[in-house]
Structures are given as C-alpha cells and as structure tokens.
Length: 107
Image (cartoon, rainbow, N blue to C red; front, top):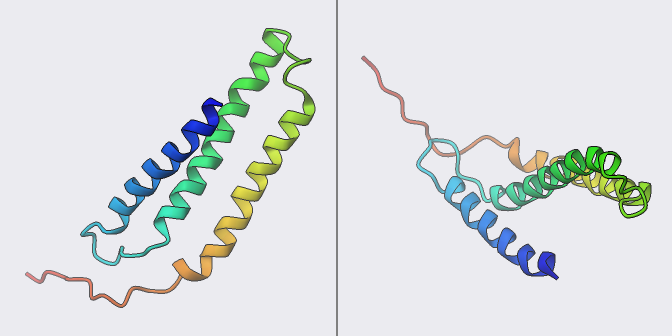
C-alpha cells in the first residue's frame, strides 16, 4: 500500500527536477527527453539499491523463505529492461546536435 502511495510522488518529484535540468540556461542543453530519462534512471537505481541491500540481508537474517530467488530474478528483469531498452530508444533523439548557437567569448 505504501508503494502505491509513494510511486506517484516519486514520479512527480523526479519529473519536476528533470524539467529543471532540461530548461536550464546551459548552452546546447535544451531537450525534453530528460524527464522520462531521469525517471527511468531513478527506477533503475532504486531497484539496484533494493537488490544490493536485500541479497546480503537475505542471508544474514535467514529470509530465504520471504525473499525468494523468484523475487530477485524479477527485480533483475526489471533492471535489464530499464537499463537496456530506454537508452536504446532515446539514443537517436539525444544524438541530434543542438540548433541553438553556443556563445563563445573571444579575447
């Protein structure tokens, strides 16, 4: 139940933060791909942290009956999909150069 309440909050916070990054005043960095990319990275790193903590704690506290291999494999599948499909889908968009001129200073 807590995860159902926290998921919309996490998505909205990460989307707003990534919009801040996307519309910053850094020359050449103005793209709308940041919000979903940022959220996908948060999902990936969240699952990585859960796995990093749950695998040792599973052995330490003898939780093999509660945290099964099936759970770990399903988390690994989510990480595999998030880590491999999203960069592939967005690489064509992010590889286009910016059309905005980058200001240079001459001395």
